[in-house]
Image 1 (cartoon, helix red, strand yellow):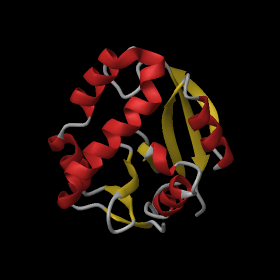
Image 2: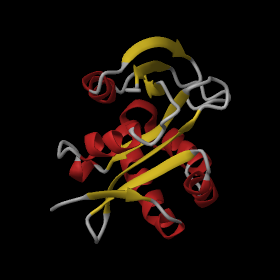
Image 3: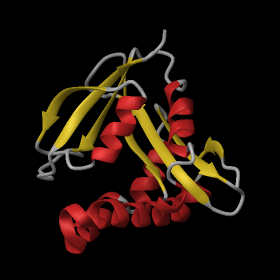
Image 4: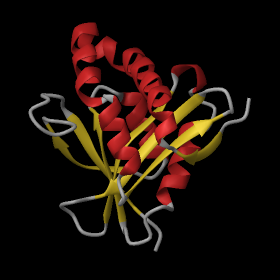
Length: 167
């Protein structure tokens, strides 16, 4: 099976939502339980939230598509607070397709989408050691920590990582 990375469109909203739900359940239920993960999915992955990210002018929303299903998705946008910094907000690969290079391929494309950015920044849940290891392999290093991953008062502790982008 071959997945191609492409820009997401509004037609992808429900497929992205399904991918996020299934990936979040597999990844985060062991850390937080079904109830908390269900709350976070309901709050963060609504059709309107996904659609607004797809349509954001200073962002890039990509999906890995094999013609029948989505194997992964990634979303990054220029920071509203930090100059010359792109923020990787989401990079998820469906559990059935992990370790096939999909996450790497999505990130490789996202990395080239922000010609004015000198830095890529992200937050990753502290307990998600697989993701931290993945980002380390991509060249990210820990620069800080937060007690509210995703903003607001989430109460989710996270590592803040950065990677310089080629100029």
